Image (cartoon, protein in one colour):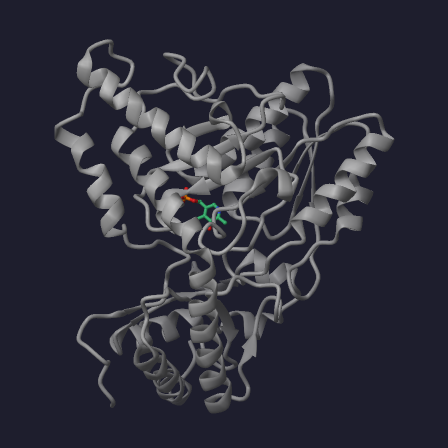
Length: 397
Ligand SMILES: Cc1ncc(COP(=O)(O)O)c(C=O)c1O
């Protein structure tokens, strides 16, 4: 068996989490034990921590094309999404606007389960179906709008298959439909997967709320951002000392906030290079895999997809077994199906896209990073057919 180009594992799971960048770690370190004070405190080190928060907030606002007051620091993507969906929905309910929420069938569970939670309070949640590539159309969104629609939430890009939604066009169609009803309907986007590769200017995108998670773009885990447009109705989900302008109480995670701000700045500054490098590596890997395994099938949109995402079905194998076999060969990636109580359950995303069950259970997600080398990519392309051959020789349980 050929050896990996060097002894460390080849990491192809960057949609799950990324390494903290050295520049980010360096920026965070002073705030753990030196300038550790509570940013609400009125002494010198408290003020230093507060200044660090202000600087981070301004840097992030600049990326979003927003004002600093519209940025809310959270504990991650999940919290930002919960706050956006529940915070707006409950405020709209309180204002008597309505209890109808629109989202899609392929959202991350942070969105789907937040929406389902609202059903306990009398909300109706409409899940829009997607096409075979995982896309919704602006027309679908506009057609689903009702006079009592409180919120629309459409993910910018899918975390499994990497399909990118036509968010700007969706926003325009939503605005037109809402104004025909004499309304304004807030649009939230789960942008957790896109900060490395896509524009985050909220006015260009036409979104009112946007959620991010620090560890997806070289920042620390347990850090998140919510962009919340000034005039959007919002009821806070964490009550307490009134931090974050009453929108998210709790002592701020100063090192984490400094880290996520630095990571976002770097990710957005390097966006073009990220896209160029990862899409070239991705195309090389896809070509290598398809040449060696002509029965493999690419999931997601062929062009409107994240540059670093490959999601592929391999007939006749289980994704989890393939992940395990590749792990033995020093390659870390993830499966698109999970085994629960002895049955294979393909993801809700693949099912919604109409991928047949037998194909869906054999899916593999590989998410790349610019630091990968061509030699590493070629090694992966070489190892996949080897692993498939081993597994197909073995009985499928
Ligand atoms: C699209 C998407 N939304 C939300 C989340 C949740 O983010 P976190 O786990 O950082 O809370 C993830 C994480 O994988 C994601 O990929």
